[in-house]
Amino acid sequence: MFDGYIALKKECPACAMDYGMFDAGDGPAVFGILIVGAIVCGLALYVEFTFLPPLWVHAVLWIPLICILSGLFLRLSKSALLVLQYRHKAGEGRVE
Image 1 (cartoon, one colour):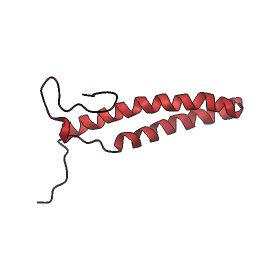
Image 2 (tube, helix red, strand yellow):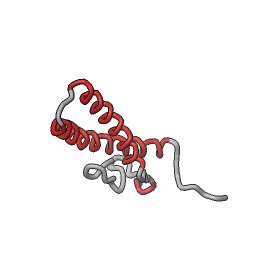
Image 3 (tube, one colour):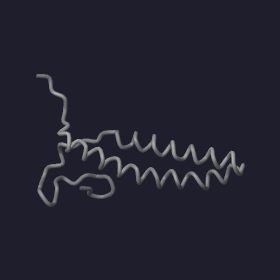
Image 4 (cartoon, one colour):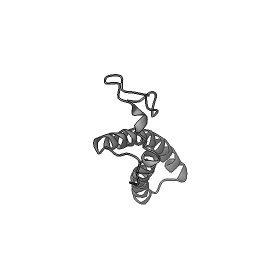
C-alpha cells in the first residue's frame, strides 16, 4: 500500500486497483496531533507533579517520545482513513 513511509503507491501490486481515488488529506496529521498531544501532556503532568524534575529532564523525555509517537500515529492513521474510505465508498461530493 505504501511506497516509502507514508507515500501511496500508484496501484495495488496484487489486484492493480488504482489508489488515485483515495485522499486522506490532513486527517492523519490532525488525529496524530490530538492523540500524541493527549498522551504526552498526561504523562508530562504526571511526571511533573510526582517527581518535580528539572526542565531538561522533560526535554530529554518528551521530545523523543513526541517524534516517535508522531511517526507511528501518522502512518497508522493514514492507513486507517484510507481503508475507511474504501470500505464506505467515500468519494467527492456531487450535486445532482
